[in-house]
Amino acid sequence: MQPQLPLSIGRTIWRALMEFSMLGPGDRCLVGLSGGKDSAFLLYALAALRHTAPFPFDLAAVTIDPMYADNFPAHRLQELCDSLGVPLFLERINLAAAVFAPSRQNPCPRCAYLRRGALNRIAKREGYNRLALAHHHDDAVETLLMSILYSGQIKTFTPVTRQDRSGLLVIRPLIYLREDEIRATRSFFDWEPVPSGCPIDGKSTRQRVKELLRDLGKENPSIYSNVSAAMRLPLSAIELWPPELSREEMRAKYRQVLPKMNWQDI
Image (cartoon, rainbow, N blue to C red; front, side, top):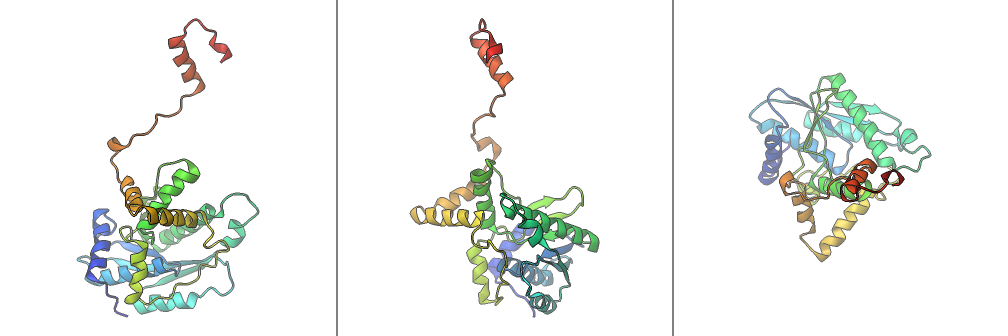
C-alpha cells in the first residue's frame, strides 16, 4: 500500500508536527496502535508523511493486547503494518485482571496508566525516542471538562509530553484534527476499527462528557469552540479565585480586624 493523504489533512498534521517540534531528522517514532480508527489512521498518516517529509525518520508500531477477549485480531494489525512497510511489536499484558479488580475507583485511569507504562518500556527497549499517540482535538477538549467536573482541576494533556525518567517524547500528531474528520478518512483509508473489547466501552466518564458537549452544542453551536479557546488562554487572561486560606492564615486575617479576641478558640 502506498499511503497518500489529502492535502488539507496532510497540512493539518504537518502543522502540529512543526509547531510543537514533534519530529526531526533521525528521530525514531513508535506509534501506539490499538486498531481503533484513530490509532490506525495515525499510523497510516505518518507512513504517508514519511515518504514526503524533508527529513528521514524511522517508523514502527506497538500493540498491547490487554487480554479483554480471547479473539484479539493481532493478524489484522500485522497485515496493516506489513502493507505500510512498518515493523510491529506486539505484547500481551493481562490488563483485565489488574484494571477490573474489585474497587470503587474508575478503572479508566488505571488502564491508561498501565498501558502507558508498557508503551514507554517497549519504546525504550527497542530504541525509539518518540512515542506517537492518536489523541485528537475532541479528546483534549473532553479531557479539560473531565478534569474540571470530576477532579476539580483545570488541565488537559499537552500536544507533546517529555517523560523525564526515560527521556521519551510523547507526541500527538492528530491534535488539530476533529474526530469527525478522522471518521471521514474512511473515504481513502478504508479501515474497519478493531472492537475495543473493554467491558465499559461506551459507558465511561469520557463518553458522558462527549455526550454533554454534543447536547450543549445542539443548543449553542459555539460551545465546543469556546471550550477549545479556553485551553489556549494566556495565564494573564485567566481570572480565578485565589487559593483557599489555611486555618492559620485565616486566624491572621481575623487578628488584623479584631486584635483583642482570643483566637485560640477559632
